[in-house]
Image: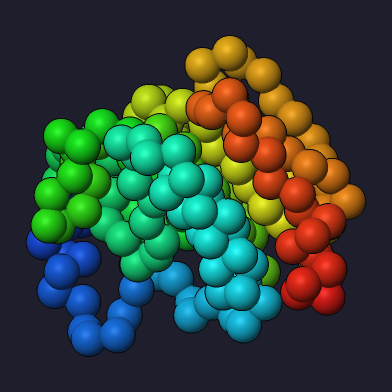
Length: 186
């Protein structure tokens, strides 16, 4: 009998696109991770953060684009890695196609849900860092915590929803989580 690892099938992006209508999954190193539908609080938090970032980008007329899930990110430009970050900021227009982002976004924000905790804190942290994401935020409303990983400067920050958090990829973008928490009654 062959070893267990030899029996496991490596999946590709084609398998993701063959999933039944309405199914959501991500693919990391050929392994499929199914995603539960996000809850209302999760979606409201994504919406608030997206609005702040979009307003900043519009006001500063930069080349960066902000997108929200479901938005396809082909992390390594291969057929075994496909993710749908809650928020992706891409500053290289050459990475953007009608299908999504080819390569690592500059900044990714993931909102932790009960079913995504291990993925967001461990699997994606490692994958995003090795793929070339410049900055990764893990926003965890259950723990009242925002972890900021600036992979370029190798700095890490640990914040709460009472704090204002500076985006490392910009000189002057500050996100006031206390305002967001007040609006959402967090």
